[in-house]
Length: 118
Image (tube, rainbow, N blue to C red):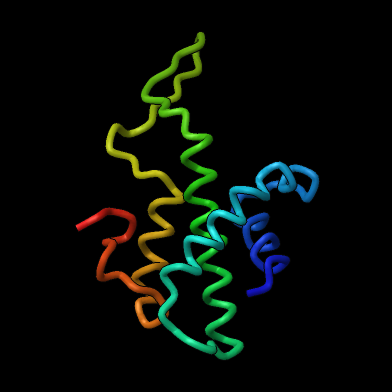
């Protein structure tokens, strides 16, 4: 796995600049370790390796989103009102679920159901 590719994808997913990504490097490393622990494909080819790197970036986004989730449900300041749906799903979690489902040929989903113990 090429960590530089994971960092690049993480930056694209989050919109962070290179200097901002540095402070999230430990989180990216943790995401890579987790994804590496559930990969079942031995000796992935180039295409599969890119998919695994994307899984790492998406899992890092999930962790990043959890760290930055402010759970705004309603906020009003003068004429401006911000309301979030109560059942809104974390963007990182949603992308992780979708991408994990597409990569079941590469990762073990038997002991975890997209992040939950079953």
